[in-house]
Image (cartoon, rainbow, N blue to C red; front, side):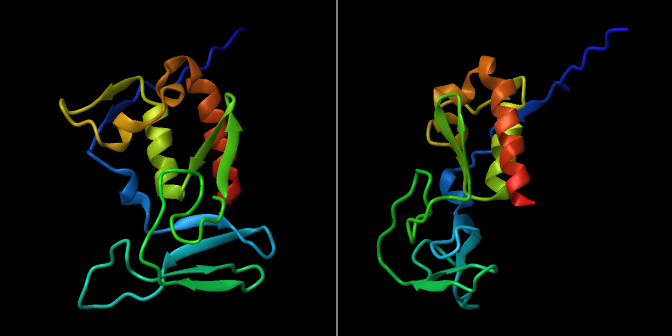
Length: 158
């Protein structure tokens, strides 16, 4: 008997999420031990909501490495964290490119998008993360391989 497994047909609706919305936490490669470390907000003041200028810290639970960032400029949009410029823990070669995610929430977004057979966007919204994904991620012919790569990244989370 030949059993064919098919993917559940999912629908993705762009909720106008932006890459910057995933920047509260980064899983990074620790510069000391090369295991997974986290970049998070260092101090949460009750009188102000955090933004990109809030101090950040990188902490490695494996080797106790830690550092504080209190700078005034960031660089975002690639496979490094915005503050310390450490390589992301969640990155893997895929289709001749690098598939990366800042954290598990970002990875969930990518999985939802790639795994969907129907992708709906709001008209005239060209700055959302869904609208800015590279063509190779959007291309349906790459779906299966990208989802395998996302599975490999999910294994790295534990």
